[in-house]
Image 1 (cartoon, rainbow, N blue to C red):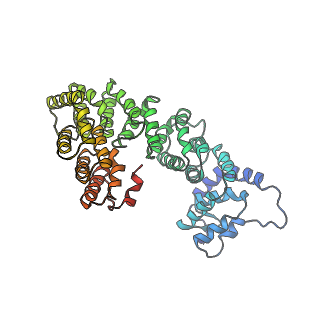
Image 2 (image 1 turned 135 degrees about the vertical axis):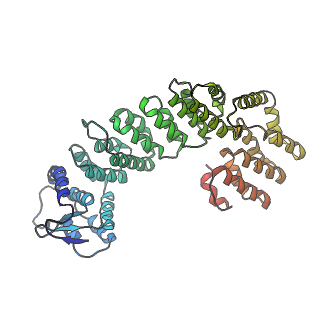
Image 3 (image 1 turned 90 degrees about the horizontal axis):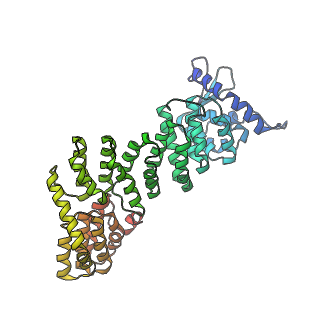
Length: 442
């Protein structure tokens, strides 16, 4: 931290712009919060905290004890990185670490002090730098009830046009932090999309997509069709969720499948890729029908999706894929149930034969994996070893909890096979101990 003098000090022109935007809030809000001062009450509390040499931790401690009436000046200090010094034309300038300490001191204050100030700030046309600082502050301390305030701070009521890229990014980051901190915030997302300016719809989706929970995935799918311009982004972000195997997955699949029958090839293409990445076996029949579509790019996307769902490399031969699907359908209708029971209950040679036949089929792989997952709990070491190897091929996340339990079995070959299967299924490289994998068991 230092003191710079003269007209050439950094931020002089920009400081004037920021001060113009913040001046009325500073004057009105500070006066209302402070009330009459006692004769013993010293002025310049923020400046006093900045004087002398100190570590960022000491600076944070000193600033956290100033009056609530100084919040606007702390905010200005965080936004600009400097305040006027004691001499005319001088500035007290903070380095990056000290500026971060100011932000942390602000975030540590009670919400009842910060939210009224931000509400006032949202009512004024302010510089984008101040909006970005307000986003950062609200993202640090806000909760579900503050999502609408975040929207107003990013794009005030009555303001038209697109949102600047840095404010879009700041909004998504702040909202993502609130969603991660307050589970109740997810319930506000649908209403926020409906009530916010169009320019914020995309950033809302990006913030939601940053959350890895199944609830966030279901909301992404539920938003499909609510605002047609958002559908391509929603389908793209759903595709990024990867192979989906969790409670409520079927509702997500159904929402995406509807787009396989749209008239717009671009939307159909996006839905095709999403079905492939999500691993939706139930979409295979419709995907097979799309192999006759006139759009060549869409047809190539279908081949990619079928390969992802099945794990097979049948290339771009529509006849081979059609033949494969018919064979799989007949097997599931006639033989699959009895064979999967033999995998769950069988022993020795009977189990080996049933396992070998089941692994020849790649439609509804998760249902096959469920049978092998039952073996992990009920079988002997030989059957469990073979089940681990089968699950490695099937790549089904449904088997992860059972495979983690196998890391504690006595047979070292079983432990190694389970570890190998876990790495293949999850794509994660962790040590072969249960504690290392426990976070993935849910």
